[in-house]
Amino acid sequence: MSTAKTSGNKVDTGRRRFLIAATSVVSAVGAGFVAVPFLESWEPSERAKNAGAPVEVNFKKLETGRLLTVGWQSKPVWVLKRTKTQLADLPKNDDRLRDPNSDVASQQPPYAKNEYRSRKADLLVLVGICTHLGCVPTYRPDIGPEDLGADWLGGFFCPCHSSRYDLAGRVFKGVPAPLNLLVPDYYYVNDDVILIGESGGKA
Ligand code: FES
Image (cartoon, rainbow, N blue to C red; front, top):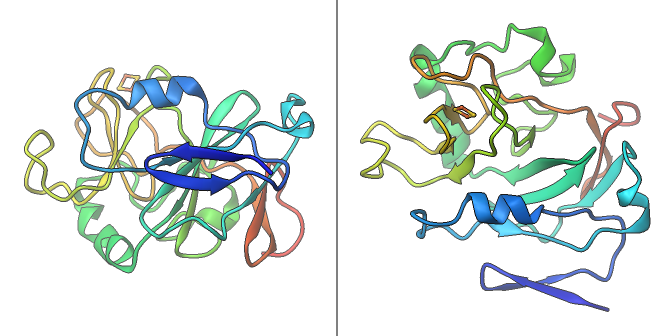
């Protein structure tokens, strides 16, 4: 059984099918953001290496407030277990968002068109690619940081041209990105496992 050591934590990699946090993601979040450990990763399996194959993710060991990045169709996909506070703060952003109600249908499956943009409230699943020109935003759960302002309640910040998204992946007004971050198809295989890339099965 192998282990991967990231962000100061050992992560069990003995179980299968996780594809990983791209190295590019690690580098993209690098300098300037030191306060928040957030990235966990696992080695890719043969199945996950297949382009387009659905990716099964067991998030049982993922702590609340932390972000897991997996690879799917050569893209980073984030799995974030949001805290109760993070969920409670989401409506406070609504007036400052371009599409607070997720009305642009292309950006999420129908089952994620809700206040959390997810099948279950706590677990957020997003394609981690900025809807402006495709950079990988950084996870910034810190509240009111100096560089993002006192009204920042946590979210995702794109370092390329300063687009901002909240913790449901909803884009703020006044930034270059035109759309909310994409929610991929996924469903719960059981209480601890999701399958990314398919919408069938249990809700
Ligand atoms: S690519 Fe993200 S703001 Fe331009």
